[in-house]
Length: 355
Image (cartoon, rainbow, N blue to C red; front, side, top):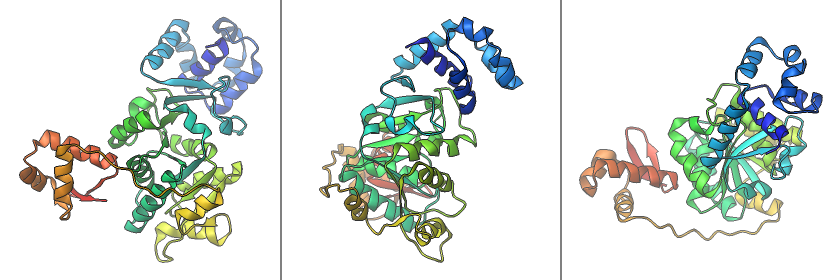
């Protein structure tokens, strides 16, 4: 890693705003720590808080150690100077200068489709998202989303369930996945897909990081599918970035009486999005081939026992434990695995049902 790349990582660790990071790169010729320390740009352009973080962490050995620890943890560091940095993001006006990644980097070069929407979808929204995503993933799209509650979570899980590939762009560092309930899901994605963030591993999510994350979701994608979202949904940010970056937008119509469909219906009405009635509309739009053959899912004996009990209808945790005779700790682990793989759905009051 060059001195310039190390400096980019250092700015990221110090949590400098993106615009100030870009200003640093434009104003400096020598990126050695000694040269940067002597440059008057630091005092002139950083706030007192930023200056304190920047100077107090100014240690080459500490930086080298942090980079090495990330590599040992399997975290790839991609700066704008790295040839592996995704071309889809490179020329964006507000590109992240560094990306932290775990998983298959090649997925960023594939045909990517973002699937986004409300954090609290209706049953209609859940069914639509699952059906669309399953067929789109089978057709070869890499499904991109933000690993939050609702549509994001459904999109990632359904993609994994059908054996597809997914990219999760998170608004925090990898050591502080938000929401924490999706930590196991993030690990599954890192194994077979790609986990991505512009924040170093120790960074905790903040309110502003989620709208910022959405520019990466939109930027990485060839198109953005909104399955269900209201006018006040954070999905609005992703939509705005998609329009700014010239990405295709697809929207699924919903009931005129449901506020969770206000954004999608408005986008269709104003011709900002393609009215999308099935996954086939998007598959044909991009000239992709349909592949609706379902993956053969391998399950353990305990998991098959659970699925057999759920085949008769919804069951709560106590009923499953009593009938299956599976120890509670193992049962809980099996239920989590089946949920991540998109085979079952968790309902209120520790109740589960097949998908």
